[in-house]
Length: 291
Image 1 (cartoon, rainbow, N blue to C red):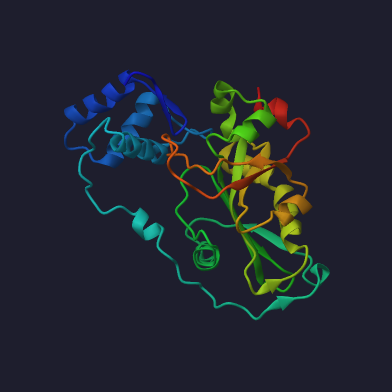
Image 2: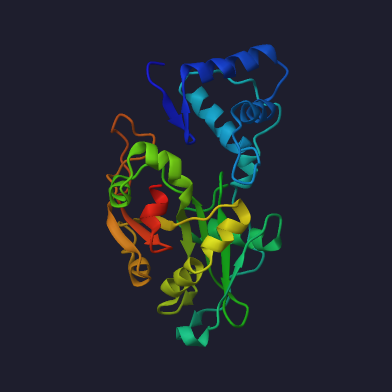
């Protein structure tokens, strides 16, 4: 490998690949889970709360294998992702149409979705059935929100996860060079899914929900991951949407993507062009993200 690669936010050198190969050679009875956990220990790869980032390590190993750098041991059991990512049936049927004005629904309640809860099943079901991108298992830091109206009816859901590794317009706007981006990317989170179900037809609801989440997500992130986020980002497929709710919620339109994917190193993969939006959570967001 002539040049170090950056995978899952880590710079991977020839020496680190040699370490992985040595671990596999010395411990042929290890499965992929044990190998990823040992890598975290060797690299002291933990999150802000001191928990090993073993899922990130497992994804890193898979990417190295796809690039031909290593050959992982056979799976000892079927991958759980196929079960996590399959469509989940709704815990409740689609409701009667909800129409009217926003004030008829207020006050809205915004709740965090916790693991292994009935709300998580509902959350996955809503996205899996009604969001055009569906629902997939989320790796890395993330928060899920369900929003109810004053009558307890579910009117929206939103998922925030890892920020995009690179985005030219965003990085220029923030003043990020590559080392600064790699160092501070965890201070940014991406709104990867946002859904108002089709039976909910209430003007201004979407922008109002975005505002409710923006007012609490920094504290929620701090409570869960022991560090805050300083800004939100999202990418809007311009062939499907105009980004009206983000503009109405005062998100900043930064530009558009180039219609490529993160794996398009040869510039051959065509992807939908997406508008790039960013929402600062604090006045001095640039100082925090460029520290």
